[in-house]
Length: 119
Image (tube, rainbow, N blue to C red):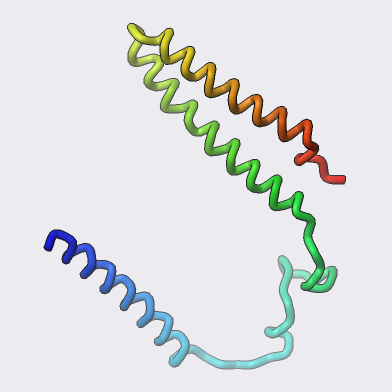
């Protein structure tokens, strides 16, 4: 019984999204043009075929960036708590030192494996 408002909101949101998509499909202008159907790449004609394979390293670098970026976000709340609770700051400092060491070990592992090399 407590979930009925949540389900109702999900139903309303889903129906609004589907309704807007259906309206734009049925009421939107249809002006076919061969130029519109061409692949588009940042305002210029494509350089190579769309089926060209992209190196896995590109995705690996992107995932590693996200991973280390999310880990770096944990330093901000730590700094706020570290300054606020000075009585237990040695425990917090040791804990964050261990976390930073794990992050650095991961970073040096990635460097050693050559995941950040582009060649």
